[in-house]
Length: 200
Image: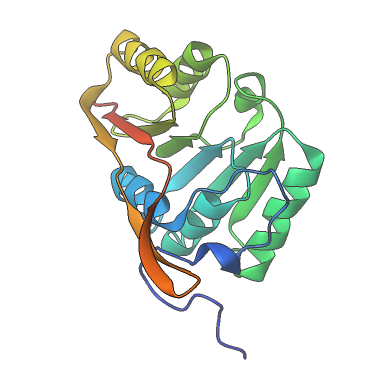
């Protein structure tokens, strides 16, 4: 039996280990680690990854929840196939890919979530409200925003659903890069990460 590509019990798979499609978003490794830390996963968590893109969060969460199930929701058929390839590549057999557009497709998912990761899409308010109504008690919702407008919309939506223990973190991460004969620190695009708990 061959050793898995990522045999560790911590997140942080290198970005270049994933299959890619040009133009399709990828949650970069350092951001991924921050996002997963806010999800506070358990081995049996049921996770929804909405707007899954390349599938990096879905794969990492699936490896951390071996007794759980991860639903990766994505609307584009080509991207759905990409997520399936990356899941197979890392042996994440507990990933289920759902092709559909949120919030409409969320009612079709057969298992209620303990954790939801919402990585973009519109309408923001409607998606957050639908996610919150389907999220289990004691569950957690995390969302990302790359602009102030999206941050404000998400903050208002979290307030509307009365999320508790709300946290907002902005990443500020640099990577060492070699450019010619010089080494320099290059900044990754910052994002806002919002998290909230459903305590009712």
